[in-house]
Length: 370
Ligand code: IPM
Ligand code: MG
Image (cartoon, rainbow, N blue to C red; front, side, top):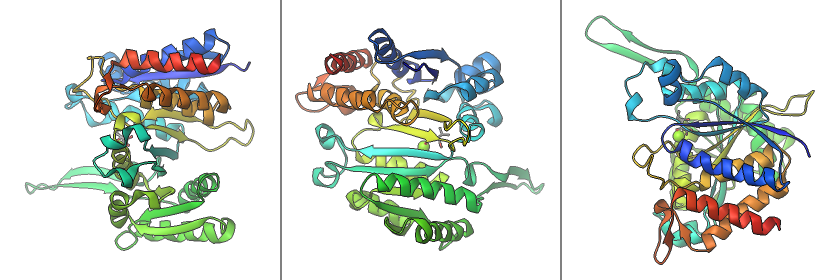
């Protein structure tokens, strides 16, 4: 069996707690011949700042480059609110994305039937929802230069962020969107604001041209991002794959996540370009939720998004689709037993801790593998 090198970066807040459950699962899989994982761990975010005064070290970056997949927890917390901007916890995450070239961020929003009641929307609007927000992750206003605050000397300051997109950046993310859609319900909705932004004008043009050239079989729609946000809460099932830029994708994916009842449920994958020689691509997997400092250390966090992120790593990086299916089935089975962490509690359900939910999912894996 192929050996897979994983770099675990638990990070801050609930990150380390939910990562423990991934370690349980990999240990189980290693012990039962379901996988052959070589695991390394590193610091990222606030915990790395505390140790090294930087959000991620060069040594950890080198390990990330060498890994078959990076499994990332979460970063940040109020205790680091005042650290210098360049070394704030989030800078570690952004450096990983940029230097590993992880331009394609796949954020599925799936509403498990058992959780439709936890959504703030009516059951029929979200029940069975299964859409993907595909977010461009290495360009746009997150990384554009100049990015400055200047003192104007008259009691005023001026802050500048720059939104930049080149043709190739739009083209390659749109290509991922069309390819994903072909394996799903064959529809792509591209969102930008071409009514206000030049990057929106180019985005629209490049997506349209690629579609006409190579993907005419896929249904393509364009929506302005604000109207798209409205449609996302009005009738989300109209969508299949939504492709959008870094900033709009950040916002729209949080909205989409909440439609499903809990941020604690959703995994994500961030993928780089396929290397022509090795046929491999750099990749990082992380839950959509953040470090949740308010519940950190209490053992109540939901480990499902983290475990499902590991499942996505098996599917997209390690060529282990069968085991990925098993993880998804094990998660569904644990929920079907009526087990719920506090964030997804419902009438008649049994409230469990992070560790209990992890144990239950590993237990279901055992049954499925038997
Ligand atoms: C996300 C997060 C990050 C982002 C933060 C932590 C920098 O909100 O992954 O959605 O803005 O991209
Ligand atoms: Mg976000």
